Each structure stands twice: as structure tokens, then as C-alpha cells.
Image (tube, rainbow, N blue to C red; front, side):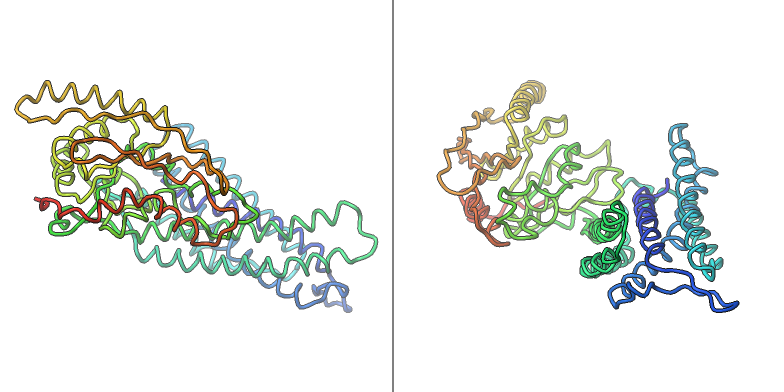
Length: 466
């Protein structure tokens, strides 16, 4: 199927074009000298800020209308002709095709009405459209035939460079936005509805460029994120195994919940995804690896992904659990997670198992599912020396905070065990300082998780992965 990310970027770009055409239509005017007609900036708006704004906006508009939009149209048309899709999918593709075509043609027509000498570079349009047709005809984007995530480091680098370029462009547009707005609204006798419209036309392009920049940067990182070709390469290395139901990957791919006190925190306080933020403290203990979701287009950011067959994964997971320096498991119910928990009871030392607790309801469902899976496996696999099912206690309420701001973070705490399977609950930081800089939260998390991290750092090497 056509890459939905590209379609969304094109649609956002066309919104940018529409807003830019509104602004340009007001800033420039057509003048005549005998038989010569030409377009100039109005005298009262002819400043360096306005000139730079027009240059940047025209470059972006040119790229969207004559390169990105034709490429997206080519990919959509190819999928409509050759793709096997349901009726709702076909209708959605047709609606997108009509929307991009109508908006692009309207933008070009408006630009040509403003500037009579505005010519369409048909060669560029044809090349972009043919490229879209060829890219879509090659098969689903970003997915290999064996169900593994398929990366393109070259594409990742291109997306990263493009993302930083658009980010710099967004900053440039934002810096000239204030003076540009002042120049535009300084004209006398403006109707009352014009200044708000100009404000929108000046502010929204910077916001759109910034949002697109963030999407491209994340996509580029996912293309370059490390994938484990074979888990056999972990032999002789110290690694931590991150286990979770695949269903939570989408939620973990979003940025973590911001700490409270927006007016007193520093920018970029919690960068990256929830999974990256969660696993960062554990990386100093070894490589953090995980089983990738079969068929995913690109690996999510966080743990290094490796892939296993859908119908033959338990033996390898058992070996990974046995050889892991620590097993970090999300206490969320799921058929695979229940089996992995009971397998960890059987194959790893108690002090190497950590349970991530996300809330009472999910934790209670996990406890019930674990008890049922343990009873089922222990009664069926009688040749195994099963340890007693450990006690999974209730989550204690947080202590009243006397300093800082309460932080209702989704992760409530981490449950660890001693050598006798006695549990210990380490609460995730429930409060943050009111005044802080960019490294405060990370130091706070490391300090509060010391009761978990320090015992792991002192453990002897795990049994060799075999």
C-alpha cells in the first residue's frame, strides 16, 4: 500500500500552500508599464523580512506542488490500478486522490493568477509522478517478504537531513513571523477580519513545518535503529531482555507524559518515546533487547529488536530468558506474556526478574492470568521442577509528598524479588521539583531506581546464552 506517512505530509503541505497563497495574494501586486506587466511587493511592505519570507515560502510551495504532490498522486494511482484492497480502502484512496488533485490545481491556478509569468515545470512533475508509480508498484513500503521489519539506512539519513532542514526552516519562519506580521498589519484602513487572518497565515506555516520536521526525524531514526539479525550474536554478551505484549507498542511509541509544572520546566525535558525513557537507566548494565512484532514496518525506538517466526518462538525466548542478565517484563496481561512469566519462574534466578507495574487494574489482571498459566503449565509439565508461585503483592499507595509537584506517571513502580522470591516494590518518582533543568528528571529517576539497578549491577554473569 502507499505510504500513509507521505500522504499525510503532502496533505499538511497543501494546507501550507493554501495559507501561503493567501499571504502572497495580499503582499504582492501587479503593475503595468505600457505593455509590460510584472509582480512586485507593495511599497509599504517591501522590507528584508518580507523578501526572505516570500523566498522561503515560494521554495517550499514549489517543492510541494511540483514534486511531493505528483509523487503521492502517482503512488495512489498505482495502488488503485494494481492493489488488492477492500471497498472502504479504495474509497479512501479515491477521496485522497481527489483532495490532493483539487487542492494542488487550485494552488497552482491561484499562483498563476497572481504571477502571470508563473510556469509549470512539467519535466519535474512527470519525473516525480513516475517515481511515485514505480515506488508503489514495488510492493508494500517498508515490509520485507519474511515478515521482518525492513530498514533503509540511506533513506533514514535522507529523512534525518530533511527533518533538520525543515526544523531550521521552521525556526527561520518563526523568527521572521513577528516582524512580518507587524509589517503586514501596519497598513492603514485594514478590515477588522484581516489581521487575525494574517496572524494565522504567518504562524501556522512555522507550526506545520515544525510538526513535519519531528515526524521525519523520528522516521529517520526508526530506519537507522539497530535490528538484531540473529539472536545468536548475543552469545558471550551481557544483555537485558525486555518482554511485553505487542499490543502496548503503539502506546509506548508516543512521548512520555510530561512532568507537571510547564512554566518551570526546561525544554526537551523528556525527549524520545516512552520506551526510550523507560529503558534508558538500564542501558548502562548491558544491551537491552526485545522481540520485534512480526510484520511491523519499522522497529519502534527503544530496545534493539530481533524477530522470530510467529509459530516457532517459545524455544528461542526460553533461551533468551535463561541467558539474560535481567528480564524486564511489563505486568500487562496477554497470552504470550503469561507464558513468558511462568518460563522466567522456571529458567531464571529470582533476582534477575523485574516487573513493570502500570496500574491496579492491569496488574490485577496480570496476577490472575499468571496464576492460571502457572496452574496449567505446572499440572501439564510434571517433569519440570517448578518453584512455588511467588506472591505478587498489592501496590502500596504513594507516600504523601511534602516537596515538589505530584507526577501521575503511567509507570507506578517496579517489582523485584530476592533469592527466596520475596517481593519488593520500588515506586517510580511520584513528585518532581518545581524548578529544574533538562537533566533533573533523569537524575531523579536514576536515584529513585537505585534499589533496583544496584543489585542488578552486582550480579554475577548470567549463564551463557546457548
